[in-house]
View 1 (cartoon, one colour):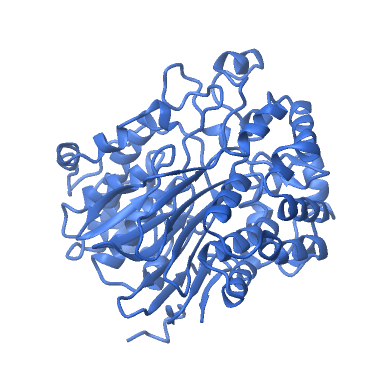
View 2 (cartoon, one colour):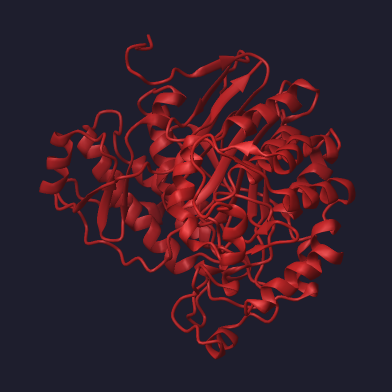
Length: 525
């Protein structure tokens, strides 16, 4: 029985269709499309387009996208909508530009060719039902006429506004200050770009006047981009088989590299060797931390563009690898931290949809850190991501920058099936935390039988950078226990990420959860 005195929200229950996003206007847009006869793909695109307008520091058409799509009774497929580096991007070219150690986020060299529009249009062309102008309707309305800024968006906006270039700041902080909750903001240039894409498809973004303006803008800021790079990006999104692993009788699917989904599966396989339901809270946090260190150490060393790390997922998920790594976890002490030299990857939106036919979509879109590169082309309204900042400048590293390579990505949608039946699209936001978040969430649901909402809202922890980040809701006695084992605790001042999920019952019941750390919600009919 749900405790209605807990100050937490209960799970959302319905029987036909459902959408869960981290922004109320995005959820409403997707639900509107579902009610109008659109399918899960249509609703996901409509919701993502709205969020690209109303949550511009987290996502946008200048970013990237990954999707897991599970048609009713069909096979799960993975869509890679991550962009590539310019053809002229090499370690040597960046060295000549004075960049030798790490690519700065606030740099045109951090901007890979945006993959989101290629992914949206490929997904829509292959599986959508309603026309793009209908799906972009609300996004264009909010961009042109304005939208009210929600509380969590306002908080994140204030924290990230410092990265904005002067051109971007003029549009995103028009009064010289970040908007407050309830303030209204419009993006008319973005409205025109969305209208053009709705009418003409991806060519309106990757070719012609828009592409020429974006290239000229990026080159003016030192970039190596060309119109040919953008033209090649139009067909960049590609379908693949997902990678997967079993966990307690369920099949968990993730996108293959260049995403970090393999790290989530590796953590889950390490946890499977422990009785997570019987462990104390401190034990569970400790095991998760140790598994995280092992998985991320291997991720950072081995994962990059799939053409440069073939077969690595199969190697890392092999039983002998799992058993060897699991033996390195000791219940009484924390391991020395793995070295972390990846830039932080914080800002993303995740949403999921199940339609009344039983099709399920797990969908994630991002511009990397808050406001991405901080660079915004004024005539198109496109805020550019900073995904290229995760490239290494180490020759022969699988994630070394190179011509038309895709960088390692942290954004990972998830999907759970059982005996061929789709059980749950799910996802967790929070950059580097995402792989750990997938494992933490699924363990809470599968091992301890928590509702989706309870599992999403539960206190979070993350072993990173030689310390253990924990949210302040972790009890003091648990903190003391963790410190005795050698963990160096960092009590977070801001929420760790977000999350959404929809569980599909065998009787058709849909259970949804949307993170209380964000502004969004799950709705259905």
